Length: 248
Image (cartoon, rainbow, N blue to C red; front, top):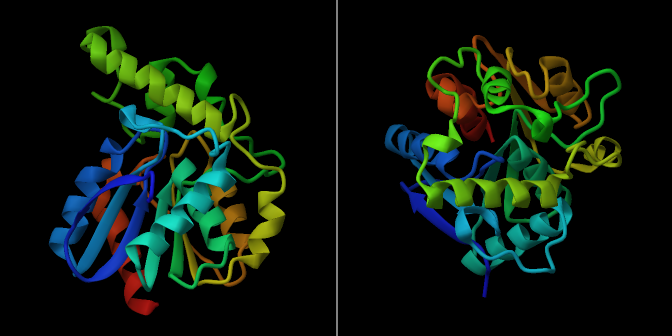
C-alpha cells in the first residue's frame, strides 16, 4: 500500500502535480483553479515527511521519492499521466520521467531545481532569511514575507519539520544532482519547461539549460513572475500547461 497521501479534484486528463519546498499548500489553489477551468483530474500528493506525514527510512533522496511515485501511479492504476512539478517537485518529476513508466505521458518542469549549470548556481535557500526568500521567489514580494514568530506554535513546528524534510531530499546547500543534467537526454516523453523571468532561486538561463538537456523540450518564459508561478500568476501558468496537455 502506498505511503503517499493525496487530494484530487476535477475529471478528465490526469495531472500529477508535485509541490516544492513550500509544501502542498503551494499547489492546492492552483489545482482547484485548473480543474475548474479545464477537463483535468488534478492529483496533488504530499511528499512523505511534509505536513506531518511519515517519511520512511527507505526514501533517502529524490530518486527514491521518484520511485515511490512510480509505485503510486501503479497502485492507482493511472494512465496517460502528465506529471507537473514546481521547484524540487520539478526535479522529482524529471526523475520520475526517467524511470520510464508507461503510465507517464508527459513532463512539465516549472521553475525546477536539480541540475548543475556552470555559472548559474541554485540559491542557497537554507542560508536565506525569510525576507530574502520572498524576494528571490516572487516578482513582487509585497505581502508575501513569512514571519514565523507570528504563527501559532504548531504551525512553526510544522514549517521547521518541512524544512528539515526538504534538506533531506534536496541537500542542505546545493539542491542539485551533478548527474541529472546529463541523464535528462533519456527522458522518453514530451517535455515542457516553464520559467519565471524573475526567479531568484534559479534564473531563466538555468531554466533554458534544463529545457536544452531534454530532446525536443519546449521552453516558455513567463513575464513578471518568480519561482512560484502557480501562486503569483496562475493564469499565466495555466495557458502553456493546458496547451501542452492538448498537444500531447
